[in-house]
Image (cartoon, rainbow, N blue to C red):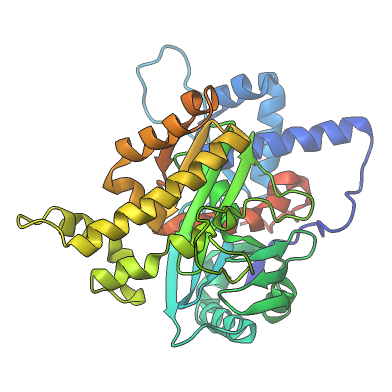
Length: 411
């Protein structure tokens, strides 16, 4: 496949003189705005960056030469004066996204504008080993090889893992539901695919995606909680940047203590959120297996709306799970005082059952001030969330330093 060579992000950037540093920084700012908005005019870039028009024009021209954006004529408008050209990220610049789970491996192809071009879910008969994940991903990419070579230029691979991932090298320290410990998944995939690979916790990748393209756009302090087959994870974004803590492990909200009489968790503690709030019992009560998890919300809402009324077991389970989720979210609000809390996966489904009640109970139970100012919502990106989030990991080196990209051949 046609790969875009970029500087190894593990090495310090080679710095030039101050003017060169400023130019590189401005180039990154312009590309980041284009990447986030999808379509942006030169006039909008000028306003957003505070740079003059000629400087913005030169930066855009360089990004065009690098093959990262296209500049097009604007559509007809009713505005007076000459319309400003429009800059759009190129859709042939792509990242490969990977999300291993306990029952499937999902692989996606995501364009620089955040659009998911392909999404392939490969169901597994058992929890996949790291070697099986690598083999599955390699086989899927091999099947796409001719198309990738002919139509795309690949930046790299991003992996969203349901577990603790060390930021420095992409080693999965612990993914208990997968049964992985000290797995160098980034290195393994890089060796198999011959591409740079970045790995992170799945919910941390998710918060990046929601902050960039979803319901979290514009939020300065964003907390995201995701519920999936492997339990509950979370991510924190501050001013658009992922807050990972010292080693990248921040956001493990699934291990918030919510029940003093709770079951023992795989982490060794008792009463953790993810032992009390789980997707599997909901699926079972509605007669769905894990391969039909994407049907959960539709099935649940339809069940609750039955003319004869819902089963008592379903109502009781929902009340129990929402009660523990409320406790955890109240802790999040009190500890972090975020502007916005978003729920994804099956947690988004719980929110959809009665959002007003859930929001009111959390806000009333939180400390004054924090509870008054926080907003709640759910993920907008749905099943594409982790594909977009994983791709963000792969795009980061290019977004940070567009000038490190090799200039593509003419034509």
